Image 1 (cartoon, rainbow, N blue to C red):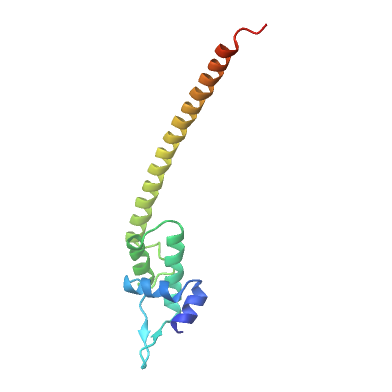
Image 2 (tube, one colour; image 1 turned 180 degrees about the vertical axis):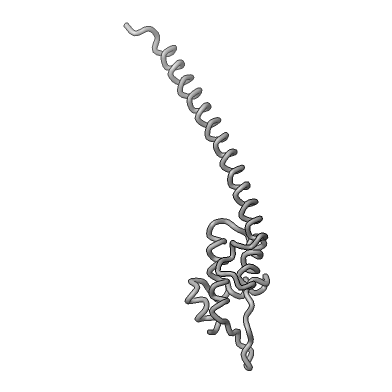
Length: 130
C-alpha cells in the first residue's frame, strides 16, 4: 500500500508517517518510481506507535515496542526492553500521582483556612447577633 492508504487505514496523516520514518520508527520499501510502499506489518507498527503516543509515551520510549514487533512478536510489549519501559513509565506515573495528591491536600488545606478566615472576619465585622 502507498503512504496515503497507510495514513487512512492507520487514522493519521502522511506528514505524520514521514515524521515517524524520519525518526526510524516506520520503514517503507520503495517502488521503482521511488514511491513509499508499506506492507501490513508497517500498519501494525503505526497502530502501535499511535496507541503508545496516545497514553503519553515519547518516540524514544516507543522504539523497544517497535523493535519487538519487528522481531516477529504478536505484541510490542512482550520483549524485555518493552517491559523495562513499561515499568519505568508506570513508576513515573505513580510519582506524578503522589505529587498530585500532595498538591491536592495542600490546596484543600489552603481552601479550608481561607474559608475559616473569611467566616471569622465576617463574624468580627457584623458584631454580636442581637
